[in-house]
Image (cartoon, rainbow, N blue to C red; front, side):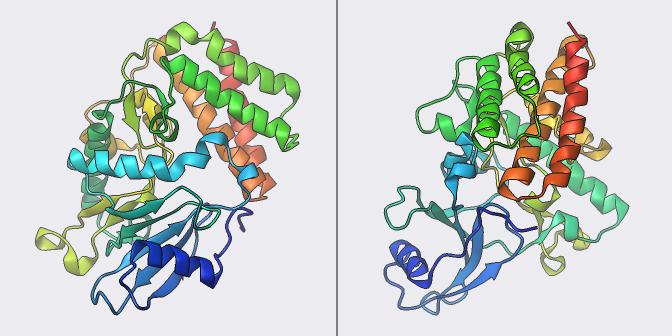
Length: 331
């Protein structure tokens, strides 16, 4: 699967980024890290700093294909790393960030390299896997203890935006998505379906606004974004340790159940560490149905528009519309 929005920078562009961050370096070398569907990512080293290694991430091209909040992902990511580290969550350390688009017409950032292996690629015993997921749950609960005054995507908030109510953010997110569908003439949703989906924020405004405190949600918490220490650096008795939780660039401030609704890592071990499961009362079910729908419609947009892979987007639509049907009958 090839992403339309990913493009390797030219050598001269690499020079401008690297020497802006490290003006004393005389030379450097990079290696492209494969698999990125949004940013273009390199490892970065220089003989001027032996033993040091960094990761350079270069933002997407074709920004007309991005959802509006995706224009501010690196701003959100840098803020989130600082907040996560402050509450004791292992994460990335930012060395340099430029979202001015003056050196080149793309955002870029550099973080310290973390020697690690992604959770989904790590082999371990069931007991060790339980402990890793339990710790992720505990860290997720710590993330929820990070608060702001405003609701919404952090990229908006750190640039002076955000919303006074949770329902206002939900309505904005749905409206921006629907407008992008229309703008890109991606016709796999009908106009009636778009209007009904957007209307859910108003229909359930009072229930959504029972959420009064904007809590931090990572919004991309899955096994690729959990890094474990390599075997030779593991903890006592060779037990795997969490080296970092990364890529919180899509983070938002709102209902902690928004995170839990993704379901990506939420197993028994996770909930043991998190300390609670989602309630099953009528209002919680209504909210989580809206959240699950949002994850699906956004993922479908990414697959169809940014990655040009229509089959998964249709599957996501079918699943999303089942939540719409359930919400249609809820009130």
